[in-house]
Image (cartoon, rainbow, N blue to C red; front, side, top):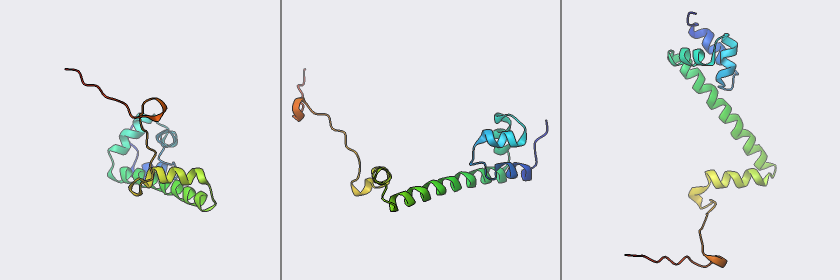
Length: 108
């Protein structure tokens, strides 16, 4: 089977969400073949990266919309992942019984 043209690869990538099995199905080849063909083409690699970035943009847009609408779960998630530099992170502390400090004994 001969490699598809860059134009055909880019067309198969368009609106695929960057999902290789979708791209392969559109090209009527295996997942591995589609992946190999894309890796061999600079323009197809760029198209795949652009498609994945577009999906990330869509996800971020949904997240921001949900936060504006008062979705506290999304707000908490965003703060714990993207707000770490502001001190928003879940801290996991290991303590002794009843929250007391753990006593460490060194042996020689």
